[in-house]
Length: 377
Image (cartoon, rainbow, N blue to C red; front, side, top):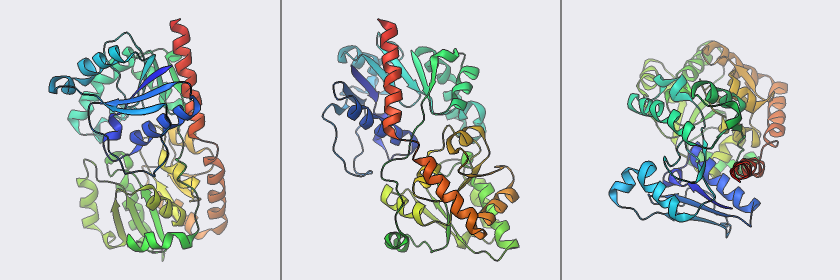
């Protein structure tokens, strides 16, 4: 097979979709050395924001040479023309999009339907664009991949496709996330000005991540208990953040919070491995990859009682209502004060994270590719 993959997510600092694209491409190439894999993008690739590793010889990243019109109309003009010349067996759109006209079979990964189910958590023009494009992309693709069964059911319910067109393929934590000793984390924490006793959140600062509820829970802990952990927010600032930062100005917890910005894997591994608890109170997720990364490093996880996250976390996490800051506060207090609870969540998380790997993700993805090509024949 000769497989094309969307390389656009690799043109900026990687978050969820960028990591998915990178890890999947590497794992596919290693698992199927007889096949060829090509990441293609009209934009330059960003290098240096991930651990160095050998690139399989059957994987290459290509920046397509296109004029301004073909770059602006990449999905409707530029990519279809490129695909027609590249002789791909199929093309995999890893970030919601596929070429809109071509004779090549296509797979699209739809990571979540937040623009449909929670449009208020996105900038209005982007939510409207996604609501127009997603049904079209879902119909255009030969098959669809989602990260969980929950998103699979949402796709065929909201996008007008049949269930047999959609496959749930779980993702996985990256290999760089593993438990390290507290002594190995000291230099990172000192450089980032993080105390020994801290609670961690990792993700983009945007409404869907529900940081306002986390801040309210943190304030409640300070007002009602003697606990004084630092709250560390690791991730770049996103959109619609004014209510969150306005709330922080109205209470007295800002000095006990540390915003680190975007962090590399080595720094994240140190924080995951040394935090008192990892808290992920998201309102909606397609999969919830940061909580698996935290589990792989031995952090006890407190997260939302919502279907997709419960599917990912299994029974390893402590679940709370994401709309109830007092429930979240009590969950944090329980993990901080009860040593047996901490030990159980840490151990259960390590076992749960070990059930996922990018090799398994790649294997299941290859099975979808082969089914598509077999049906064509």
